Length: 244
Image (tube, rainbow, N blue to C red; front, side, top):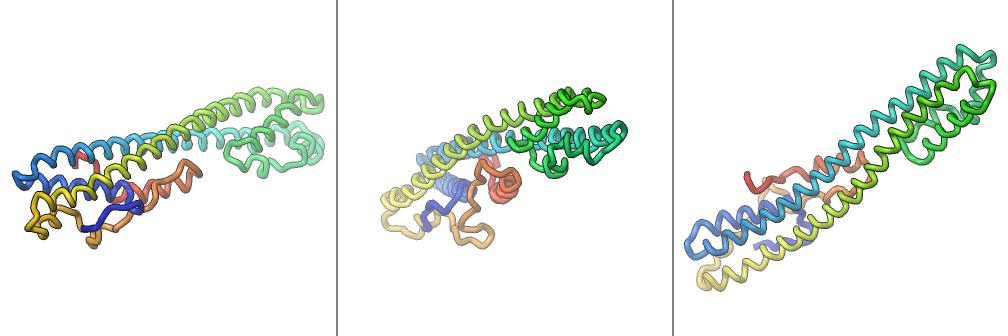
């Protein structure tokens, strides 16, 4: 029997528990353990699903953030600069004043965040207060609306990061609990079948099986969205819920 340890993540623990449950149901002597094992696995699946849901909620919100950020970028890089060209006699000098010496492509490069917010806020303030830019004053209201929309979603994502981290902590705790249960079943079955060790060993999943890696990649952390997306794709591999 290969014991489950810290390196075994929830997908592997889930599969090992499913295998154990099936084997426990195969004999009258072990039926009493089967329901208990199934309940342990069901709780693990529940925590896993809660974590995946929290992760997907944040990733979905990140997609909205990317869209709103692109809208804000277009408002500055296309709309505002186009109209500036139409009204400014000395465009280079007016652009330098409006964008505070920072090129729009550089200032708008971040996806949300404090640096971009300050950059856009400076543009808005200049549009609202500089007489030379009075023909472009209507852009200030549109930019403020797009910036406010983006900041509201960014605030929601910060809340979802907390929810995701809590769900990940719950999953890791439940994974450890399920692993301990699985490991403890070995001595219990040895007591039940003291003279048949091969039978006891047959109840436990072969973690060295070629069709299943002995360990899964780490659960994705609530951090960078691109890295999280890649980690999600990896960790979902080999996962199956209690109904499969």
